[in-house]
Length: 592
Image 1 (tube, rainbow, N blue to C red):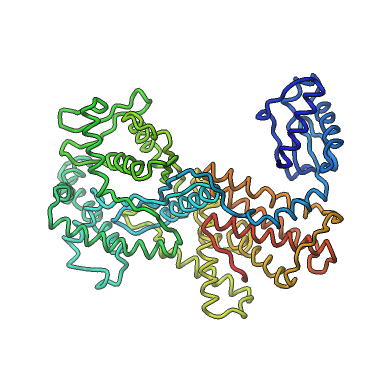
Image 2: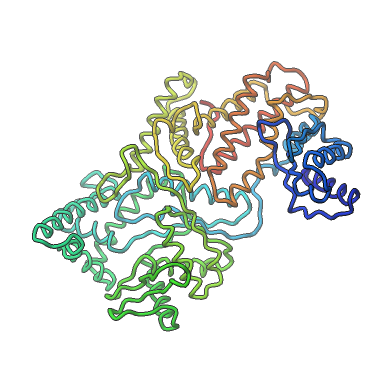
């Protein structure tokens, strides 16, 4: 039984004896006391006011008196309106520390048997990964790590958008303007080379549209009538008809892109268990839509296009198959969703990590799956997140104004190197060790910066701020871990003593230990909410409190039980930071 449960059970018994009423425990709230008040745990007594027929303060005092007499772990209490703040004894906290230190499973993942699929990245094969993809990958990968830690059997996946109009744009531009250029001949990574031709296509298309507009054609009509767009549509139709020449070109250019992606993923330290390709799932989606049409779920217009009417669900009419027989993204997503649940029939949840610009798309997708009668449709979730902005404005791939992911990772590692070398603390490390450290700091800083903001919020990226050693940054948390390890190395790794009951905790020790003991609950809550920012901010708070403790309270110069207690507190802090940061996909260095 946890101490929370003991307090609540004692309260239930008191109410039962005092006024003969059974309490619904779900009505009771017992949380950590807020920083500005004295205490460790706070009980909200408002649900008890009607039962006791007294003012909130009177009820809180009555309950506090009973709890302090009944539970030796409670040292004192105070009342702030309808809130009862309980202060636990030093012995209670030292016992908590000792039990955590002796528990080999304190930081171990749990097992609950649920199978959860997390989709992230899911790029188009017509351009390299950019800053927006970094937030997507770091977010999805972190959620997969958090879910696994909380007990789920996680399948990390992506749907590679390897077909469609956008892919044909790069293909057509390379065939018309590429003159046989390859990654080897150009010295460019394959994904960057293909992205180059996506930009070139847009430049030539704009020129054609402008020419048509000068001839009096409206902008909308010019976009459709431009020769390049007509050629792209023809190429897409040939692709779907398995034209051997087009398929060969498609395979070659996609191969270039995959090689480039793999290099980027390696440096990002993200991985996948199962890859899905739109080129392999869109036909399944088309077959499902055709069957849905026969079953009366969908309807056909005079031009032969197939639609779904979602007005009754508060949405709109959604196109699923064009009049020329080609499919849209929604068709592919239907096929992919069905295929995934066929591949993993025991799956309890499917999570789609996609930007909030696609909120409506996923509302429509999930409703269509429900209309098709799939019982698992309510288990689909959209992990929506805000876009990443730059000081110069929004990124646009077709105009070549994106921040390339590879270039950005190079930049943050370089910035981490300059920041670290300025401190002059790395003389004892070899060159290869220093390179590894700069990589750990730079990539960790980038991940932390992009994950510390609530996923739902749009954010502004600042490369210089991300790698700062001070402030709310990843390097600050990493430095705190390294500081803990340095203290433990200097200590000679003293074992914790069994007789810690005589240690009287100072406020900063109590605050730090209270935070450490909430680790599992904080991680579980973050995993359920699919919110890595909660993990990042928890690690940041632990780092801040430890540094206050470190600066104000002697550790290595302390004696006896106090020294052992503070060393064990340092050890538990280091392990908490290490595991917490690992759930963000971030490594921590032993020295920096």
